[in-house]
Image 1: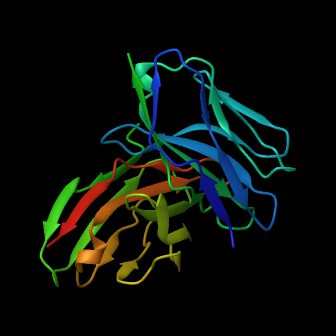
Image 2: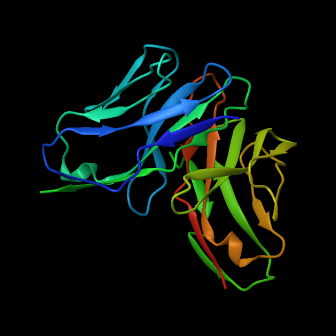
Length: 113
Length: 113
């Protein structure tokens, strides 16, 4: 079956530090890959996505590249802000799966001023 | 745009009680899903629907029922609540196109005593 493995948290960084959250996946087909963000007390919001190998998703300074050869979709940001403090989820969706998402366990990020 | 609306936001039940979590979307999405979020486990799929009148089980369906009589609504029923069902529940919807993201509600925090 499908699975998503995320870097365990929590992660604590100082403002303007570089962020990497690792994500690797197992899938039987060619999935679409997503990063979702959850701010305290809220639902999940799509941060970025990539639908095929070598695609780069980007949004709000965050980036992730779909690497089929390493089955990875690592999230990066060059300079984090306090407002980036949230829980980040990596997820995949396989074609023909009724678009259902398989999630990683989530990584809590705290950015200190 | 309201997007995906979940009610109630919080609920406390006693073991053995029943209740229905409501979910409504105004985006005319065909795909709707229910997930539960537990610490350290990400989100797990309970039930999903690919259109009115069609539902199917996800990863953790036991103890939950769903129905989909309209495109807009997808209620989740707990027939006899158990402490193991204490969780945060999220409803999501999607247009179903390849690589299209799911849109999440703000969640229902449910405690079973």
